[in-house]
Structures are given as C-alpha cells and as structure tokens.
Length: 418
Image (cartoon, rainbow, N blue to C red; front, side):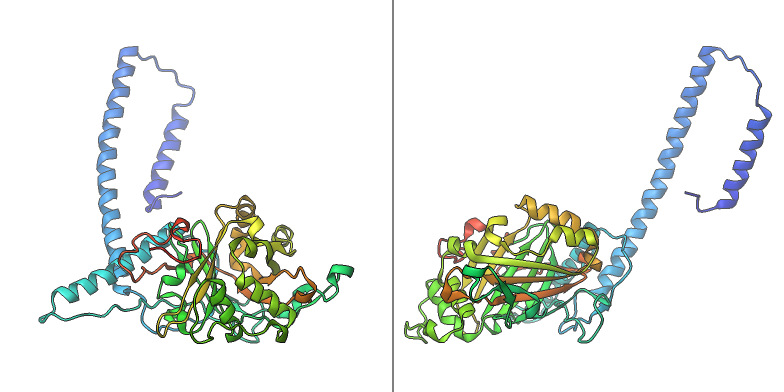
C-alpha cells in the first residue's frame, strides 16, 4: 500500500501528524458561503490534478504494455518438433486464464502475420502447402518418479486398481480386479478456448499432429475455459465393429465381422458398444474416477463409484472414416458445462488441480452373462493439471471452420455435416 517513494510519504505523514496535534481542540468559525467556495475550489483543483496524474499513468501503462507485447512477439510461436518435458510442480501463479489467453493470442497473431508477410513479399508466385501448427502435447509422467513430484503430465494407471463386475455378478454382485485396458492410452492435450468445439479430431494439430496414424478413440471434455482431450488407440480387432457400427463400408473386411465367440467377455461388450447407436452407448458406458492423491474434500466429492456417463451429462459421438493414409477415429464429446452435477464437482476440484492426481477409467457395463466379467475399456492418470500453462487451441486447418463444429452439425449417423 506504500507509494514508490516512501521517504516523501514519511515526511508528509510526520508533518500531517504534527499539524493535527497542534490544532487539536481548536475551534474555528467559518461562514457557510466561504465553506462552500473552499469546497468547490478544492474539488476543481483535485479534479485537474487527477487528470494530469491519470494521463501520466495511462502513458506509462501504454509504454509498459508495448514493451510487454514486444517481448511476447519476440518469443514467437511454439517451435516445431518441440519436446515437452515434465516439470516439477510450480507454486501457485497469479495470472488469470484470460491473461494467458491474451498472451498466447498475441503469439498466434504474430505467427499468422509473419506467414502472410512472407507470402506477400515472395518474388515469384508459388503454391504454399498448408502446414500443421505444431504445439507441444502433454508429456508422459517420468517412470519411477514419486507421485506428486511433477505436474502437467499423464500416465497409464494400473488396471487392477479398478474393480469391475465379476463373472457371476448377476447372482452374487461381487466385483473383481480388471484385466489390462483394451484401448491403450496414446496421450492427452489441454487447450484454452472460449468456444470449446465438438469433433476436435478434425484439428490436425492435436496430439502433436499424430492423431490419425492409428485408429483412435477420443474423449473430449468440454470445459468452461477450454478442452481437455485424451486419446486411446483402438486395436485392429475392434476396427471392423467400429466401422460397421458407424455405417462405413469397409472393403478390406468384405463385410465380414470377426466372430465374437473368439473374444473375451469384456471384448464382446466393447464390440457391442461400437455397434450400438448413441442412446444405447449412453446406457452402458461408465466412468470410474479415483482420486490417487489430493485433499480429502476432493476425494469425498469425487467418490470413486462408477457412474453411467450418459445419465450425468450430455454426450455426443462423432465418427470420422479413414481417408487415404489417415486412420479413422471415434470421438465422445462430454459437455461438462451443461451438467449441474459436473459443474458442482468441477467447482470443488478446480482449486486443487495443480496438486491433484486422479485416475479416469471407462468400462462398458456388462448386462449379460456373455459380457462378464467386465474389463476396463481405457484408463488415464492425470498428474497436476495447470490450465494457466496450457496452449491456445490451434486453428482448424479448414478455413471454413471459423466456428468449430457444434452438436447440431452432426447428423444422425455421427458424421460431421460441415
């Protein structure tokens, strides 16, 4: 609260204290008109001085902002092939997400202006191929490192830590540790945006530009400030069911599906899930959240009990068929903002995200003997996310996508209609 020059301030304070001590108990009679005149004069003088001080302050602020933006522009956009490394958990930061968005938007604007300038000043006309904007994806948690030592990382949890319905669950209601995850985790991203899109898989920059190297199941958590996206590889044995369930004619399989009799019960449940429509998927797809490390209040709110996702928040499914060398993907968009229960949990968790380690598991509920015992479909462990360090969502490659896909842009078969 002290001014920049404490010595003059101290002198003025001492003079003021001496003056008030001197006039203590003194009585002064002033006529009303003189008092009003004195008050108006003081107000006008203060008003003029305030304008002068404000003008000087604005000038200093503008100079400071120009210097700040110049330093931001000098930093440039993220470098290509930049390797993200796990970072030790930092102290709490004072920046707001809006400030981070502003800074990263300036970086993106500078990058765009630089590309346009290079194009306009080229000596000969030439076709410039579209380039993927490379952004660093979240790194994997260092193997063997103690939990809580690094933040903004991901890892694969232990599947046996999740308890699923056993072979005789329909009779004895007993649960057993799960076998390995059916869809291995490929990684995850976190992006800032004021308009969280559906079908984020169309963005060629996500997962470091490697999304469509293999068939992938995407979970897109649409949050108030951006998106958190996890990626899970779909093994080849499930791809024919994925394509058949989404109406894609797969010439490589000649329309023949692998026999379900040769698969494990948990694999059969996943195949039936892929063959189902959105309503049927919503009825059997369960999330199992487990707080590994965090405050007791978060553990109490999260609970750790399985929950049918479709009954807790809106879910939309989008399928993108293969295109040339690009593999297909199935995306589940979870609208966290539209769910009151999810918003309440998020309100509690958001204050502890930097110190929170949480497992997110998903399983297809087995309702028939042929689908038991269950087996975890996929899982992900998140280590201390800090949204303030996230990248701004890169622009979509298609110039017509100034407004990313919305749920109403998805047709009844899950295809994007844009």
